[in-house]
Image 1 (cartoon, rainbow, N blue to C red):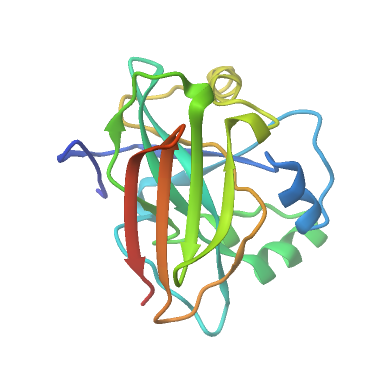
Image 2 (cartoon, one colour):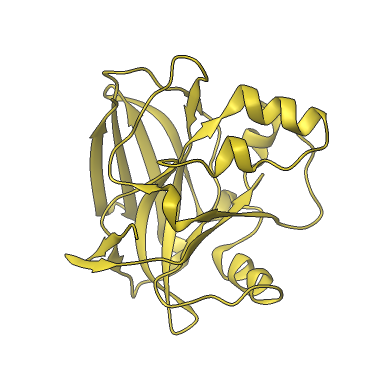
Length: 203
């Protein structure tokens, strides 16, 4: 089983809950429609990786997100997450009205920083993603269509969340293709203070 780290301790999530289309400008970026309810999908534990991989045959897009670790049915810790997506395949599947799993839930499609226990105001959280030292994504709580607590409550209606499970809160505009040799750096802020920072070199 794959694991993430919380303050240096290994935690094994049983699943990762994602919300799609949670930032208006990203919805427009991909020519999608704004949904009247959260667009939720799941990645399995086997999707978790500590490294980021590119793919020449089926280009992979990066999507940076604020991520939460669940404990006692609450948003207990925060980290930076990468939702890696086979965009061309996803577009084909959506056009045919088929599920996204092949484009979203493949092995090594979920990459995370270390998590830290979070006790501040969730409204003060923001994220940034840098690609080769250039900022490509920046967003936070204020711009989310569905706030983290709302995502948690919506998920509870149909799914049991175990301690260690992860919730991803959606990606803002600025997604793009990964190439081998690229460097990604993700940051989570509480106002101006950095809570989490992690970097990956794309393989």
